[in-house]
Amino acid sequence: MLSTLEILRYPDARLHKVAKPVEVVDERIRDLSQAMLATMYDANGIGLAATQVDVHERLIVVDVSEERNEPLVIINPTIVWASEDTQMAEEGCLSVPGVYDGVERASEVHVQHLDAQGQLQTLQATDLLAVCIQHEMDHLVGKVFVEYLSPLKRNRIKTKLQKQLREDR
Ligand code: NI
Image 1: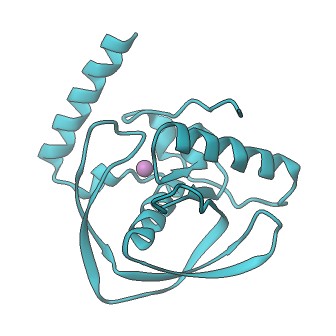
Image 2: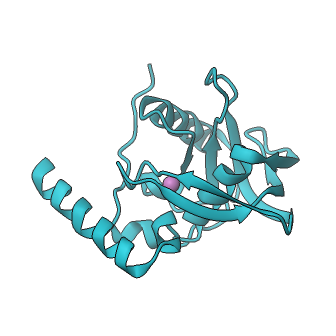
């Protein structure tokens, strides 16, 4: 089994770094994608952004399938179209353990990206996949989902997680 990577936990300042585009899709990027997928599956997540493992390049991995056998490697994603329709869904994040809250996002997005072979792809995402991709793409610009919540809620979450971190040490 592949070894897993350490996931940064909110409020860690490195989660707010803005990722740079991946320049070449090579073995390094493929190895990183595989390690990120292993980390995501190990943590029972449905998505993980490179930012969360302290690599600041535009790469995310996603698997929203029930069987956990439909991994997607999404490199240099751009949303080329988003629906005006929105959906409100409960979100969680591997960097914000134990916290779930509703976030409103576009119901459907079309995402242009490179795959693990460096081929250009367009993905039409709806439902959970649309939510997940928008959530992960936010990580690449340094945004964590709790930033959509009220300052009051966000501060409560910060305090709770800082306390947890101290206890875990
Ligand atoms: Ni997240």
